[in-house]
Length: 271
Image 1 (cartoon, helix red, strand yellow):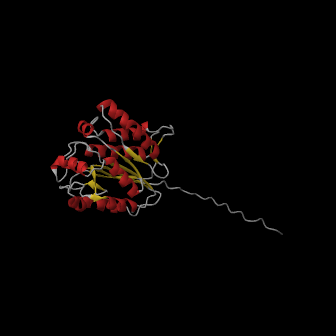
Image 2: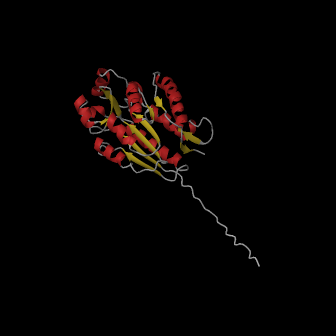
Image 3: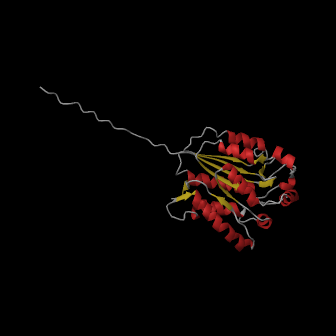
């Protein structure tokens, strides 16, 4: 007599966890040297943080944005400490770094001007500002394979004479500075290269570059109409719209620098 074979039904329930987004967003208006003070950097950082949070929520498991805007939060040491806190992210997570401040180049090296900076001498920059080498190491040590970097180190707001002279005497444009940083970091970077006139006037209560960037994030950069805002789409939108708006509103030239490397990936979902 043959018994019926036992039948076991196995139902596997596989839950695919969505990646998370982590962002460090920095806006610096106040500096140790009052001549360096900016007008729109904090407002720009807050607008970017609010927008990236809104569009990223439908796409990611978790969206965590660290906003640094006070003089105490935006020192070299505190920014380094903050970035060092992202060494344990998962490779599939997305990391976003946005900073609105001053940037300059000295002896071929890019420097991000932090709130503790007073003097712009070569020696003091190496001691007080965030150097290209430090930025490279800090961002490279974040294990996320998808990184999106926005460097709004244009001459926005009230530019001190010291920074103007530093840029002129070192003989290197801000666009060159951004290219140096881009090569060092090896990540996708979108950056503003703003003239003094445009920065002083501002646009809609913000720097022109960040205003356009945010409009792109809200949907205008979705050129293929698939409902997602992808890094390459955003880079192309900013590259196209900033010069057009600068010419229309200010009758001056402004050309952002976009250096997308690697695969384009979505930053958010708008519908």
